[in-house]
Length: 88
Figure 1: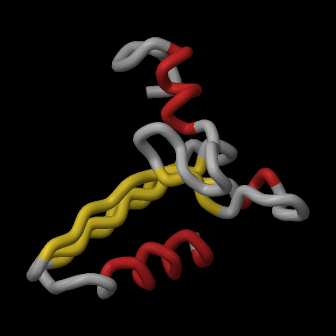
Figure 2: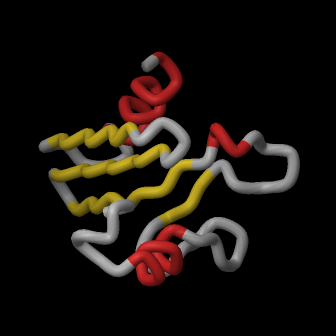
């Protein structure tokens, strides 16, 4: 998406920018606050319902994306994604 092939650069910037502390326009933008290193910034989106849990996290600094899918109810996938991000 960063290349501009899927969505225009301006739309991608809007979707991954932060508004109201941690929310982007389409993606959650986390670890973005005063004193947090830029390398910790990540954006993504997940989904959940009874019996499913999805977490997608992209780290623009490293161009890595972590996707965790589970056939169990939330929040089971969130700690797994966090662990993978911290130990990759």
